[in-house]
Length: 438
Ligand code: ASP
Image (cartoon, rainbow, N blue to C red; front, side):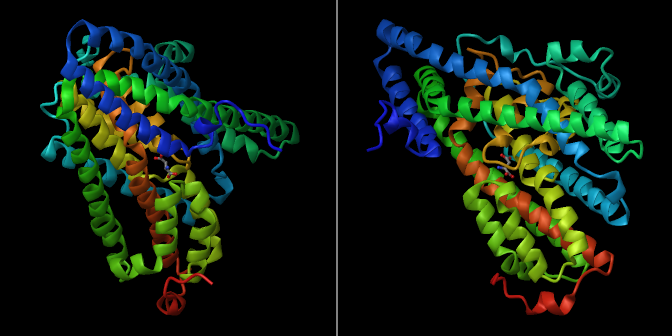
C-alpha cells in the first residue's frame, strides 16, 4: 500500500488550483480583516505577512541565475552554421514581431491605463521611488564595467548583455575546428545546460510554495485596500487578451497577407498547436504538435525543423505583450506610472526577457520580475511592487494560457512565412490540409 504523507492533500492538488485557491482565500481573509479593522486585524496581518515575505525572497534569489543561465543556453543553442538565409530570415522575423508585440502591449496599456487609481497601500512605500532614466544613459549602461558588480546590484540589462555575449561566443566555439576548443566548449555548454536544469528544479520547488506565498501577500493587499482591487485584475486580463488578438490578426495576419495567405484560414489549420499551447501553457510541450502541423501545412522540413524548436525557446511574442502590460499595470497600481525612458527600457528588456523565457508554464512571470527591476520597480518584501506583483501572480495561469497560445502561433506563422519566401512551401498541401493532424 502506498504510504500516505501528511501533506498529500497539498502536493497532490494541482498547483494552479492551489495558487488560485490561495488567491481567493487571501482575498476573502483580507477583505474580512479590512472590515474588522483595528488592532486585531493588524495583529493577524502581521502574523501572516512573513509567509509572503518568504515567497518574495525566494523569487528574488532566483532572478540573476535564471537570466544568466537561460540566456546563455538560449543563445548558444543557435548554431552559427545554420545561420544561413533561412536562419537570418527567421531571426529577423522574430525580431520584427517581438518589437511589434512590445509596442502593442505598451500602447494598449497606455490607452487603457490598467491599475490606475488603485493606489495600493502597503506599510513600506519606499519602492515607489522608481529610478528615472534617460535614453542615452540606458544605452551606455547596457555594457557593465564589471560583470560581478552588475550581478551584485542585480542590474538586469547588463546581465542580459553579458549573457548574450557569452552565449554567442559559445555558439561559435561549439563549431570550432580545433578539437581541444570544441571539447572545452561542449563541456561549458553541458555545464550551463545542467545549471539551467538545476534552476528549473529550484523554480519548481519555489512554485510549490507559491499558493501559500500568494495567500499571505493577498491577505495583506486586501486587508489594506479592501475589494477595490478586483476590478483592475479583471481589467488587466481583458486588456491582455485583446492585445494578443491584435497581434494575431494584424501582425501575423499582415505577414500572412503579404504572402497571399488568409489569417482566418491559417487559424483553422493551426488550431491543434494553438489549443494545445492554450491548455498546456508550454511552448516546449506543444512542439511535437507544432512540428506535425507544420509538416501537414506543406512547410519544408528544412525550415520547420530549425525554426520551430528555436522559436519555442526564444520567440515569445505573447510573453512580450504580457510583460509590457503587466509592468504598466504594476507601475500604475503603485502610483508611479512609467516615464518615456522607462518605457524604452521596457521595450528592450521585455524583448530580451522573452528570449530568456523558457517554454514552460509560468516562466514569463519569473521574467516579469526582471523587467520590473530594469525600470527600478524592485519586488522587495513589504513593498507595494511586491503586493501588485502578487496580484498578477494570482491570475497568472489565466494570462499564461493566452500568451503561450500566441507564442506558439508566432512560431508557426514564422516557419510558414520564411518557408514561403524561400520557395520551401507546398501550397497545394497547405490548401488541402484542414487542420486535422493524422
Ligand atoms: N508559458 C509560456 C510558454 O511556454 C512562457 C511564459 O510563461 O510566458 O510559452
